[in-house]
Structure formats: C-alpha cells, structure tokens
Length: 161
Image 1 (tube, rainbow, N blue to C red):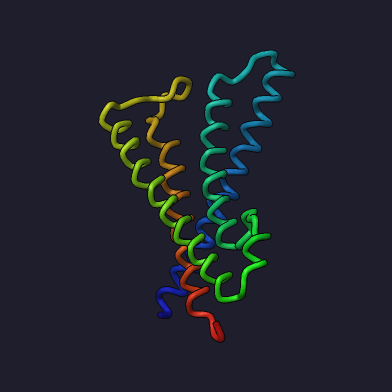
Image 2: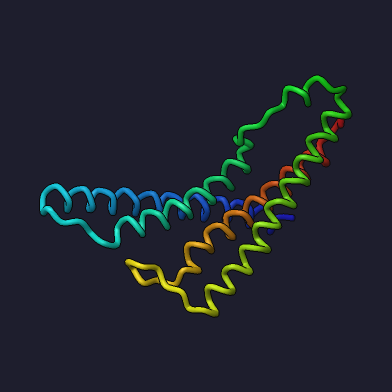
C-alpha cells in the first residue's frame, strides 16, 4: 500500500513538473517568435508547429490534472434532484463511462500512432516523427482514465455510503 501512495505522489509531481516545463517552453518559444517577427522582421518557421504540439500535450495532461482535482465542468442539476443512493449510482455510471471513453481514445490513439511509426511520417516544419504529438493525446487520455479510476475507487470506498 505504501508503494502505491509513493507512486501516486511521484506521478503527481512528474505530471505537474512536465506541464510546467512545457508551458515554459511555450512561453519562451512564443516570445522568441514575437521578438523575431517584430525586431528582426522574419519569423521562425518551426515555432508555430512546436507551439501547436506543446499545446496538445499541455491540454491533455492538464485535463488529467483537472480529473485528479475533480475540476472538470459537470452538469449535475438532474443528479442532485435524485435520492442520495441514486446520486451515487449516477456518479459511478458517469465515472465508468469516462473510463471507457478515455480507454477508447487510448486504444484508437495507439492504432494511429502505430500507423505513424510504420509510415515514418514527419512534421512539416521541424521534421520530427508525427507520433510524438499524437502520443500526447494517448498519454493524457491514459492518465485521465487512471484518475477517473482513482475517483471511482475513492467513491466506492467512502465510509458511510
């Protein structure tokens, strides 16, 4: 049990530090692009592509953090009008659906990544393997599925319900 707690804490720190690193990269590259465009009158041909790829990773990893913090937007008007036992069942159903949805994204995302690797597709400006930006979707969705599963386990093991 102690190893799981340490792993979750380490995963949380790794996730947050990686997001912070990516945001820092986005800020630096964005600043370089603006400076280059307005001061030197020429743009960096690779900057927009890099920023797009960084934002993909930040979006999906940030969504995972939002699941962990239970900060996703939800419509719970109908849920709160139900009796308490049905509320919990509704939450469980929502979490199971979310786990399944994220699992489907991971499954089909891995198929797309496999095609990207096999065909050796490269990005236009930076000429990096295209599976790298797609991997952000898969990793973020996998992390969201883990977070939804943690929320489900936490809900089901709550005392008094």
